[in-house]
Image 1: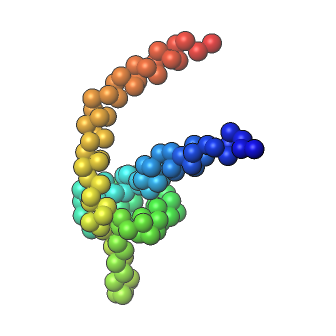
Image 2 (image 1 turned 90 degrees about the vertical axis):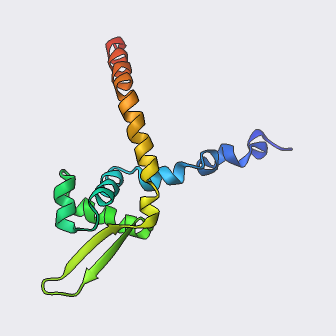
Length: 129
């Protein structure tokens, strides 16, 4: 005899099927990905130190980890120049650049709605016991 879980559609049991954008959210919206991609898109090819300086509060370890993940995901290309001292540059790829309209849309949404979010937070916090 079939149980409720046997009859449940795959979307109800698999979060990625329930929300097909979850994989995109994991790739693009982890803590430091957006500032890295934004900086590379805005300023072009950068050395590690330049990126670190422009982003600010990120640690070298975290920046290295995120750059490796972005390179693996095809969003960033790393170019090693065998010089003395060695030079490594990072650049956003066409795939990474294709996210620009998404970032622009999110920026517009933020400008239009962050005040409302702040008001909602304030109202919620006032009601908390």
